[in-house]
Length: 259
Image 1: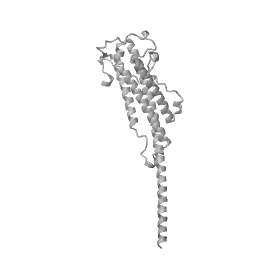
Image 2: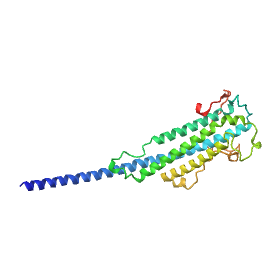
Image 3: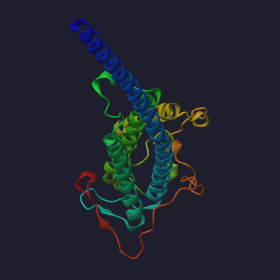
Image 4: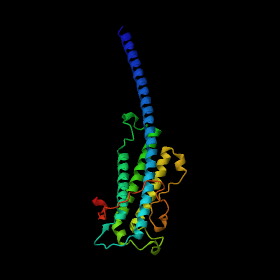
């Protein structure tokens, strides 16, 4: 009698175990499906962030080209008495805003929780969508940071540019750096362009944007005089332009890190 009771108890335990196993498998499947759906939404958002970075890219190109043409016409200043001319106030503020927006976007992406909080048993089984999401976010963070760093290099060169302004485009070789950059910073910005271009291509591939990947990402932040578009062209390529600054006069010149 006791043996039969034990066998019955063991069978009940076995049935309960099977039920628990089935429930665990169902729960795992649900978690897997939810993870895929959530990360696919994140990947779609990454596609929008990629286009946002490209818009900032065009604005930075246009802003630097405009500043270079304005510096062609402005008289040179003495190093000991620098002020920000009224013609450049709007552009310098625009440049600072571009840097700040790129930094904010990189910070927001870095805070994003790429992975769901999986139980320990499923950590090694992340979905394909989760891996693509992680790659896309990492690449976009790199691209935004590269743009912000390039904008900072341009800002830092403003005092030097005001001292060298006013000699016109004819007196400078096409291989010379733009006035906001010296040879060292020109090399730095050129390297950042390459980093940004590679990161954008990686992000587009992770997002599955084949039409984006097939086209080469041309990051055209001007580094050399030859890369500055003609004055009457549209260097912003349809993007918004800096607001003019009329009637307020020149402004104090502050270092980029002092703002």
